[in-house]
Length: 91
Image (cartoon, rainbow, N blue to C red):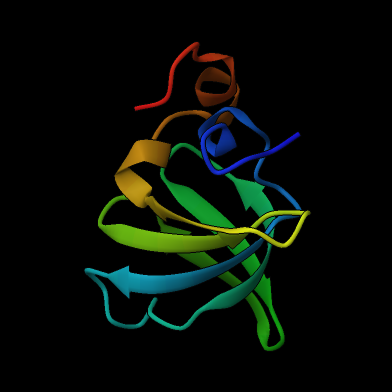
């Protein structure tokens, strides 16, 4: 079960996400479902198409499957997804 405390150790693909703060102002307000993840980027499917958002310098608001929202600093997500998921503790 995904909780705000264990979010960093779970697969992010399929989760609803919104960008609430970013170093690049064009990212702010991007929201939709995560369709792909790389070391440095999240691909978000929005109503207007797929947008790639840099993780570093961005604050994300994730909506978990149970409806709980969790705000995450993007720099905590910077890692290859398979490495991040296998980490024992959160940053």
